[in-house]
Image 1 (cartoon, one colour):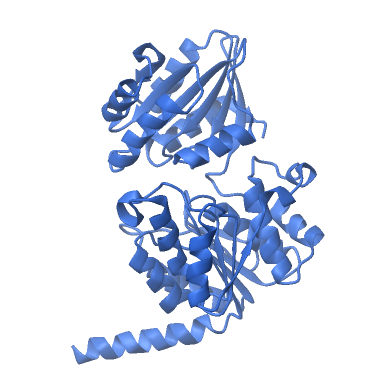
Image 2 (cartoon, rainbow, N blue to C red; image 1 turned 90 degrees about the horizontal axis):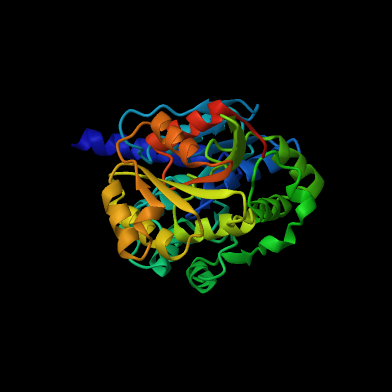
Length: 383
């Protein structure tokens, strides 16, 4: 027992030594956009020729070295916050001046542990607080905001675009003598957004620019780095597909899986029903997200504009039943639970008369990724 305690103390002290050899430590947390913001901040800092090490935990966990080499993180079993220790060692070995690291913890106590015993951030980022993981961080969105604040730095600064629960962030930051800086997404103009080869959110870019400015990187240098860095695999993309004389456009929005994020995407992309274009929403469900499946069913019935809904993946019956119970006509929704990605694609192509816009939401894990790959294989990226 004594040997184990001694070894634990040795590891703790070694990590403490390592993490403090990196002078600038940026810890990114939030419900949506963490991976994108982490990459954008890292890219922006690299735009000024800084030595930056980046680690994301999004759709597919990755590290991006000081030299810009992207490597996948191979896990045995479930994700474990202990992997952050090795990430820090790798960053130190590469003589990183900055580490930009996405918070990978969901449970409130593990978020606290990650910040207080592993990252010791100098700058914190909270992208937003939304209705996700309510079973762990809830039951309310205010509780989610409280949980996310467990990653705030001590005697540092935190940047956020979260407005609805800004009071919570300010109250928690005040206890830590940390300054809060709210960033308005509308400070980013449309010309700036046109520089991205994919569909990015203004809020993500605004946050990243603010953090880069904090470190003395001007806008031109930061944007040069942001435009050039590889986006997260789950980022929004649009594809054009021609099949049997029909035209389909497919938007991969599977990485967004809470109602507020869907609304933001619908507004950002101006998605709406229009004559001659069938609007089809493809909802992919996961068995281990029962609460989210039922939440999705209620949401698509009450708040999402579309001509037709297709539900794929697992635990689809509950989602479809909830949607119909909440008023969605049974004729406007199809349960394709248990079907393959090819079968889902063929069904959607079959119900398309001439033109269709297909928006994929729900979950990308499992069948969601297969569906994306199948659609992508049939067309070309246009945004």
